[in-house]
Image (cartoon, rainbow, N blue to C red; front, side):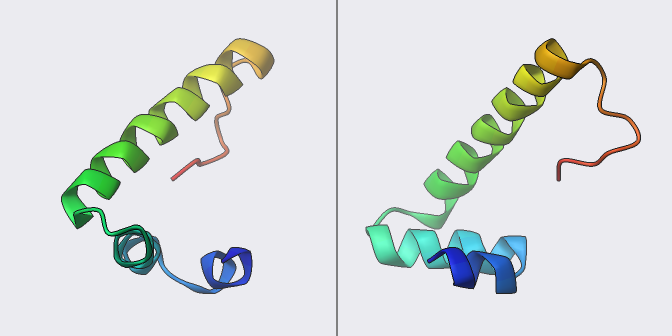
Length: 56
């Protein structure tokens, strides 16, 4: 799975996760957005504003 994640686009990864877990694509996308937001909050808390680095 890690290799595929490194090779695929964000949308393709979400499709893959949805298909392999039996969850709806919309559900996976929503969960991904929540996780991305939490990762950003944690990074800012630990290291300060990550600008100019993009997280997604």
